[in-house]
Image 1 (cartoon, rainbow, N blue to C red):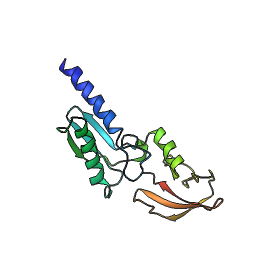
Image 2: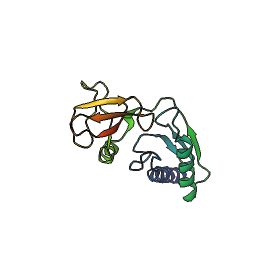
Image 3: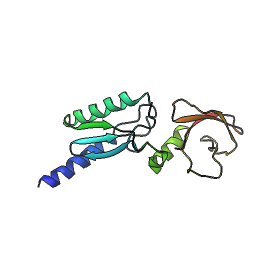
Image 4: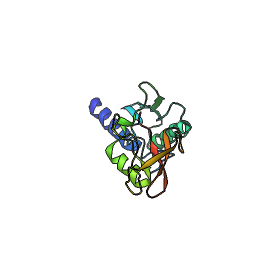
Length: 156
């Protein structure tokens, strides 16, 4: 009976975490971005998208608040950077949400053309403007066809 209760609580925690949006990209949640590395009935392990992520404290606080609001204030939350977060952990559904939001999702590592397609017009004729976009885990680009600027997730 205890094992079933633990399984139910773990599933409940996963569901709660899916309600926690990324503070910098509110159209995706922290589970979809692959930031949740482990969940058990009494702990959660998170990995932020960037070691120096300025949103780390906000993410931690938002997770703590969501768990507490659901009667799980006792759950321990740890943040680890080993292994380092990778864009491979972003769920496909989140990539579609990013694209609709105007952020080019990461391309497959080792893709022949590392330039991201424009999230607005779909053109591959884009130019890197800056290695750093609105956040350290994104770079800033400009579409050479529609001339719109956009951020793209860096592949790592």
